[in-house]
Image 1 (cartoon, rainbow, N blue to C red):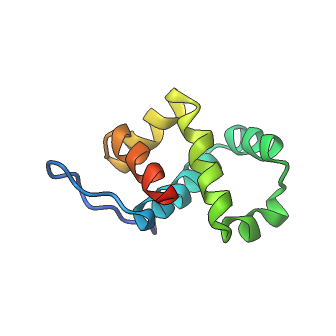
Image 2 (cartoon, helix red, strand yellow; image 1 turned 180 degrees about the vertical axis):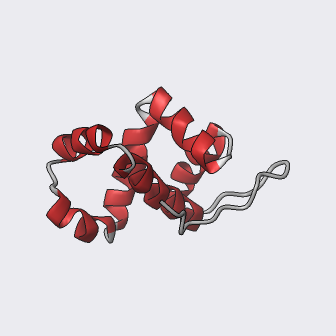
Image 3 (cartoon, rainbow, N blue to C red; image 1 turned 120 degrees about the vertical axis):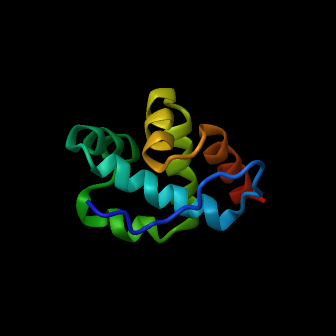
Length: 100
């Protein structure tokens, strides 16, 4: 799967933004979708199905919950960070920036 969301490589300390947080949330959904079992578990927990996932992803509150889900599962967070070639702390900071 080609990665439509692009993140700059980390160079020292970078400021994170709500926009970056939304990008990580979309990337997290793509990461979850890359393994059917992982996606199925996520959908079961949040009470969604494949048919309404796209609509939910347009809601900023849902994007917050996607990152909350990832942050609650350390191996998942580390896997996402590795896939995006960023330190996990950057995802955590981006999630915090989304709340403003």
